[in-house]
Length: 322
Image (cartoon, rainbow, N blue to C red):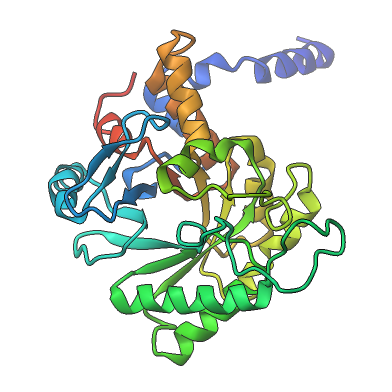
């Protein structure tokens, strides 16, 4: 064989790929990183002020609002299946077997439904629209985060997107003896998205007027998202990107800009509802599509996944490889 023929043969042999992933174990070898594991999943749970509630959320198939008296019965089997972590939207309580994260925001509890305290200053652009007082909001959010820490939360996760709230929370935790005892997970790059609709029904958090575009990131703003990842410098222990599937480039940016921080992603309510709806229409298999999306999150750099599919993955990950 001539040198030219050998060169051509070598180039051709490098293009023959199927042998590298023809077997389930061989496909795992091609992962070049991490496999999806149960430990990655954090389950979002909505807590009702009715202690005996078990309310179906129509826009989030298979999800409910739970009263505190119902939680043990609901979560017990999931813990036995491998559930390690939950994030509560509502009231924190002590769950000794779980890593307990608490969402920190004001929108569920304000009359106007926005994520902070309204400013008394006029809006210089739209005189008829209210604006938020970022500094006052950050301080109030820090007070709420500290209250959750004192109530037993292992992790506080501010989802409001106010400037400076990570620094304010970290300072409050440190000044009160919780700096080394509570994880601070920041919604660092949270975009103004159409995919939050089902969540807002579930949490009763839709704004009564206006929108959140002035404090959530514009969907096309990659540069702003990269700047928002500054939360690491303010004391965040975990950085989050939300939503996930439309923003995998931001997940990758986050992992590259802050390689020493865990990257969390939130597969938000609209993403979940779309996947379920497509499966119900017969467009694809639910399990396969759920895995495809989650594996893309991990490929992009995520190590923590907030997903309403968490109970399903606790079962699916115990099933044989297909």
